[in-house]
Length: 285
Image 1 (cartoon, rainbow, N blue to C red):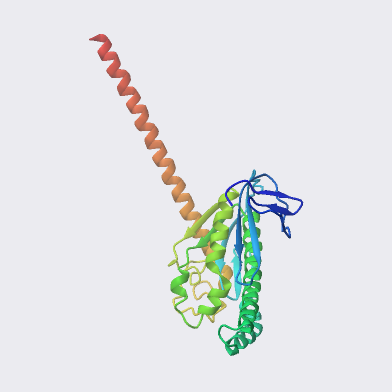
Image 2 (tube, rainbow, N blue to C red):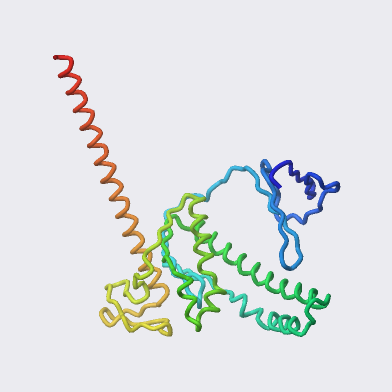
């Protein structure tokens, strides 16, 4: 609905609708209404998303820096030791989902009972999706709110899904969506977001002496560095390496920008001096 949408007293007024539509409000609508988008879920529920023009107040600035390693056992592991749990929504609701899908397969195609059962299956999927997205938003908001500089890996999730042993768990944990949320929330709140190369051996590298343990497997949650004999937590060690590598990239980019800025200033000053000399010679001639 591109224009003339009104929302008052939890009632949505749309042009050409004689009666207003009652709305179960999720949050107060403040600011100038630009347009509204109505959508229908497979579960039969209708939603309206109202876009308003308002001023965004970013989070307060902080001096904290963090490296974030993504995993399956824990959703996100920070370099300061903070861990955000993987709630495994699909796994916890798999019995309910399996039952409803089995009932759907028994229904006659085209019948009303099959249509009602399809809605039940859709509601289970919707519940799983809602729980997952709520947890991802809480996690991403917490990371962005508490840290000024955030360093993460750039993962190829599509390629990782080709591993049939881990594909279901990777799809359930939703690394790509978490990365997307942290990235745009960092831009909104004036945070520095840095992604390092996906092939950087963050888990295999000892953060103390930089020894690389090539025979490290997924089952090794803790390992002892053969070089400096330090016991390392696999995920926290990876997060610390990600932070260190991300800060190197950030400082190198800053150095390149400062050098280019200095060269531009020198070039502009040289052009000004040449133009002054040319004008002086023309005046004398």
